[in-house]
Image (cartoon, rainbow, N blue to C red; front, side, top):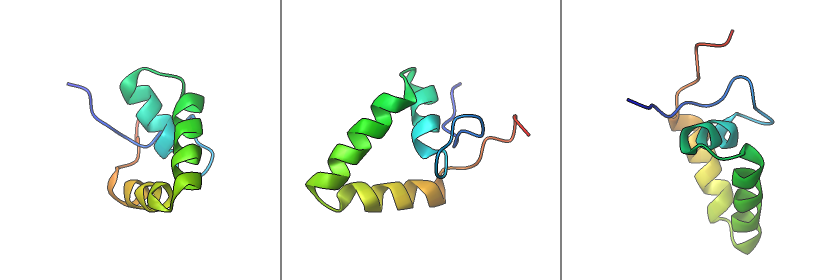
Amino acid sequence: MKRLYKSSADRLICGVCGGIGEYLGVDPTVVRVIWVIASLLGTIGIWAYLICALIIPNDMSVR
């Protein structure tokens, strides 16, 4: 079963976009671009990122 984790290997700020990219099987850059567009259209992207950064657990496999 796949689990959603923040990425330890592919992170720029908190690893949220890297983790979502790994979970969905897409390039994390695509997730980041979508997230930036959502943030520019309104503050929902910023709030969603902050909430995800708080509730998504860290990936403990790469240390």
